[in-house]
Picture 1 (cartoon, helix red, strand yellow):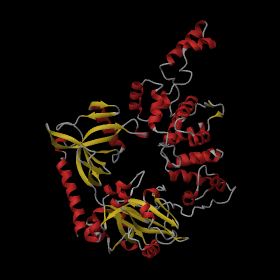
Picture 2 (picture 1 turned 180 degrees about the vertical axis):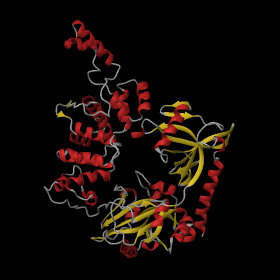
Picture 3 (picture 1 turned 45 degrees about the vertical axis):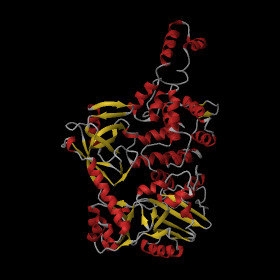
Length: 599
């Protein structure tokens, strides 16, 4: 566990991609199986310990420290793992001075001084290296008598441990580890590593063991299982290349880059095919009859949540498409789709009210034939024939947009209804561009695919509350709740309409953080209320993708994907937007959707 903890620590404070890559590759090269395989699983998010929640960790520390002290410390540090790691009392510090006297701690001035120090430690966490200093060389032993605690031991124990036994076992490990080990353990079990490493980068580090292309690992990945012994054997030339035996595997998806004006100027319209970007959930529908599966974009099997769609997949193949809700031949809003997401049980009534639909835009396999190395134009032709053979109303084609130049595409993006989207225009969030000759490559290669979203909605709102962030932002107030004006029972008041935590630069973050600290008017646990009067406060220009009605918010509205687009230091809060403007925006959205349904 010490080596894994050291790896996490160095990754967390290493800003360079290449250096992160080198650190992970060195770790994989110098660490034996299965330890390195479990580390790779942790770094790629392949592990899940459903009973190890953050609340459990809070409960354990609450039993061992003063709750008020913990609350203040957590508010200051901003990261649960780091706070608990530093505050967790060592077994020695929890022992009473009287018990220590009988063990050679008493007698003479030296013994008195030591006993006094120990008594102080009963209420003060023992000083030690912070999680940023990992090279103390401490070797902690498994309190169960098994020697040093290994990452393998932790994972194998957690995979078989019952919910009732988990708190006691976690406490034993936390007792045995130093500050850095505790920090890494908590991050591991709660699933929030936050060390600046993507799953793709971790796979690339493994591929670098044998100078392999990371794309090879991506293609193999869905058929691999932790701790990846076969993968490492192949990478080190000690075994054959792994082969998946799954008849209906997930295939790593191809992603698009966001398009800007500079990119558009360098591209030729004749090289691309265009289609709508739908406001749904990216899925992969794979069938090897009688087996059929539906995967999320990240490879999670969500088949049980959509049994009504699985029935339509009666031909062997793999479709890349968008999961939507279609009623009366009209695509519904994303808000409607949310009624089917993350459901533990799917009733006939739910299926009838929110029928699932697959809008297909690529074909990755036709029967046993892998089509990913064919150009997109050929795959599209094969897709049209495949959907026709399926002949099921629950699966249809994403229509192409006929354009001659970029001006026509810009017009289609601005007004989808007039460009062929018709009644489904309200469910369009932009356009996609795909090169005719584009192979289906996993990841986000720049050039073959582009996404060009519709212009966001923009409002001016007033900062009302701020909360510390997590990870590298744990020392800054970076999560912001903002509001707009409306008439309340006592006159003009601000009502919260959204929360955002990105869109600003590091320099702007420092300025907002300073404003929050200097203008705090109240505190609610980790949340600070800041001054928000008509003549005093901070105005934020907020961009967002859409609006929907919400009974959970006081304003009655909820934003989709809000982000801070600009800081309006020049604008007094009293000139910020009103709730009525948001309601007008929503009425226009709903009117457009209704017009599409009527046409």
